[in-house]
Amino acid sequence: MDMPDLRTAGKSPLAGALQDARDYTISLLDDWAAWPAGAAPDPRHVPCLDIINPPLWELGHVAWFTEYWCQRYRGATSAPLPSRLADADRWYDSRQVPHGSRWRLDLPDWAGTRRYLDDTLAAALEALRTLPDTDAALYFHRLALFHEDMHAEAFRYTRQTLGWPARDGLAGLPAAADVALDGGEFLMGSSPAGKGFVFDNEKWAHRQRVAEFAIAATPTRNSDYLAFVEADGYHQAHWWSPDGLAWLARTGQTMPRYWRREAGRWQQRRFADWVDLAPDQAAIHLTAHEAEAWCRWAGRRLPSEAEWEYAALHGKGFDWGSQVWEWTASAFAPYPGFSPDPYAEYAAPFFHSHRSVRGGSFATHARMRNPRYRNYYEPQRDDIFVGFRSCAPG
Image (cartoon, rainbow, N blue to C red):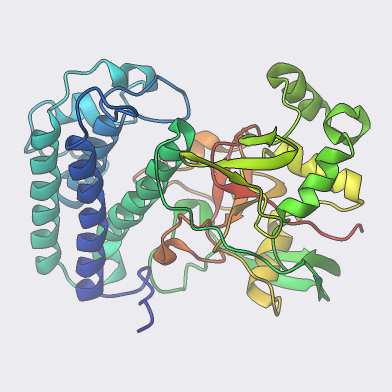
C-alpha cells in the first residue's frame, strides 16, 4: 500500500504516523536503557561533541517538542500552558538550553523519560481527536511528526559518529548518466494556494528561471570519488576553494571521513564496522568543500538549489531521496517574502551561514521526502549522511 502524503493526510493517517514515530523513538530508549552498565559503547556516557546530543537529553527533547506545540502553545501573545513535567522547559527547550550544558543537566532517568514520551504522545493524540480536519488545525501535529522524524535520523548520525552498531541502508547505484533538461521558468518553493503542511523556509513559491543544463541522474559514487583521492587530489591546491584549503589545513584530511587504506584495500567505516569500500555505492560523509573540489577536478560543477528542484520536478530518470543528502552550490537563504512560522528558530537563524542541501538519505523517513524540502548544513559538516551529484559545465 502506498504511504499517504503526511503533509496533506487527514487526522487518522496523521495519528497513525505519530504513533509510528513515537514507537520508534521509544524502541531506541528501551534499547539504550537496557545497555549493560560499563559496556562500550555506553549511551549513558557519550562525549560532549558539537555535532551530537546526549541521547537521554535528545529523547526528552522530542517529547517536550510534541507537548509544547501540540498542547501548550497558545499563540505569540499568550504565555504557554505549563508542562506536565516540572522543569521540562529548563531541561529540553533547545532554544534556551545551550548545547554544551545538555551533558550536565539533572535530567529524569530513562524510566522517567519513557513516561514523558508515553504521556505526551497520548495527550497529543487526544488533542488531535478534537481538532477539525483542516490544514490550519493540524499544522502543529504535522510539525511535531516531522520534527520527530528528523531526530530519528539524527540518532543515526550519532550512531555513526560514535561507532555504534546499526544496519546500513546503502545500496548500489548505476553509473551516472546525465539527464538533459531544456530549462525554463518554474515556481520554486511551496504555493500559498496549495494544500497541506509547508515548512517556513519553503515560503513562498516564486518564479525562477533556469538555463538549459545537464545533471547526473544519480549521486556521485565511491568509485568516482576514489579516482580523485588516488590522483592525489587532496594535495593539489588548485582544485580547492579558499574555504576548502582552510578546511584542509585545519583538519589535515587526505581522504573522506571514515575512509582508510588497510593492507592495500580501501575501506570505509559504516557505523561500528570497517567494510571494503563498495565502488557502486553513493559517496557519503563528504563536506561541500570536497564535493566542489571533485567537481573542479572532473570538469563538472554542483547544481544550484533551483536546478536541483527543477530536475526533481521535471527530470525523467532523476533518482533522488533514497541514498544520500546532496550538497548544492547555493547558500541557504530566505525566499522572497519569507516570514517565520511560530517555531521561528527552525530556519531563520541559519540563513546565509549554511549551505542548501536537498533530497534525503537512506536514514530519512519516506514521509519526510519532498522535492521542495530544504535541508541545510554548514559546508564543513561531514558527519551527516551527505554526498553530492554534479552537473555538466555550463
